[in-house]
Image 1 (cartoon, rainbow, N blue to C red):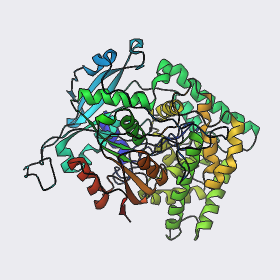
Image 2: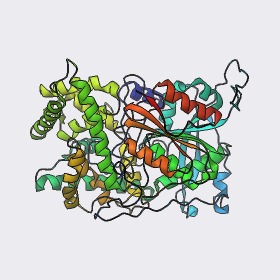
Image 3: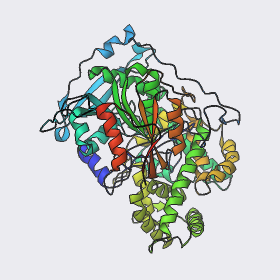
Image 4: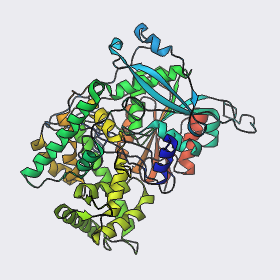
Length: 572
């Protein structure tokens, strides 16, 4: 099956929801609800270091918290280090990378593909290279081209440059994303930009990392993340260690060079090879962290940048995981309010009953995993939780979740298992993409792990449960993988000012489960040129959701360079 066919298959079924948190922090992910066609599930945010269920985004904090004074793993204040911009000139030792010539070749369905080299280690380029893969949908000139309108400095049909797209993760394939959604973009944007997707290092077709076989990933996703006794704690630790050791054995030296800072430097190499003076960029979920990192490193080369479903880089992993748990709690409340008003709701007639019945279902599945139509697999509590979390990414999945919950109440776990499998991207043949492998690898480098061991996780549970009665316990235990990661983290919580950068539009959705709205406010406030654009609604990310107000504001910015008024609100 071609890569384009795989991309289409995932987007017309249930796509993976991948917004992650590093075992140390949070990261947000994948295609947004706004981009997904009817019936598809967005990539979202998931706590990294998770042994199952969802992941979070790197560096998250509770609503209203500022950049300083965040609780670190030991309970003290974690350092928040400003991100220093790199020199404007390209160092001579890197000049050969910036002087490459891209050889675009035809690939699936009218797209063009290429590869290029970047150093494994930017500080030691002699240590070897990585080969990265990119795809582009060439600009489609508008026909006929009308004269430029008032206030529009670019005539319709005149190419502006390349617009790089990233769907999040970390771990989401930007190549497959562009192949899946390029033709859904606004006609004006498609007329003036080549839409380009670069698989970040370690992801998709760009020197992908791998960690476990499909069979062992099945076991990993089913591992109990709400341990009730020491034997279950030991099993959870063993699963985390197996994942980390599998990555070490199968991925080698790459594991130490998959950070977001390095991925941002790769973006700058591609920008130069594309012939663009500035990087024009739309990033969703974790893609906002990547984009903000680029702007912090290269403010003078930052062009028209949109960061949708924003992450707050000033947060440490503990605060980030806890806050993301609160985001999913907010999304659950919205789902429950909707559900109890519908005749087919299997959770009662009040929000309180809905919460109680969900907790009872999780407890029952924990005690007795449910049969499914895959006779070799039963639905575990962790997979049931992941299935519910998956459906929080987009309200068009709520009917499917109601059916899956009703079936589970009747003893059939098939629906929830399929939602969980969609979250991880599990294929029908039992194989997995490298999404979660890359997710862990990036997250475990970007931030220090939140816990030194299982005792720390156990102590954090009450605080997490106060933030999220439904999902707090799970998310408190999810971040153990980075505790045992084979390479040390290279990143810390930091603020991004991007002083001197052109205006950057930061989009936040008020009831976003994976990247809570407070993160968008925080990032827009950090960025010297940040402009906050709010979508009042449900689901993960907003641009491309066909809200005329929000899509129009973003498209006008991409086409004319004028950002929306800071604080503008669209949606319900």
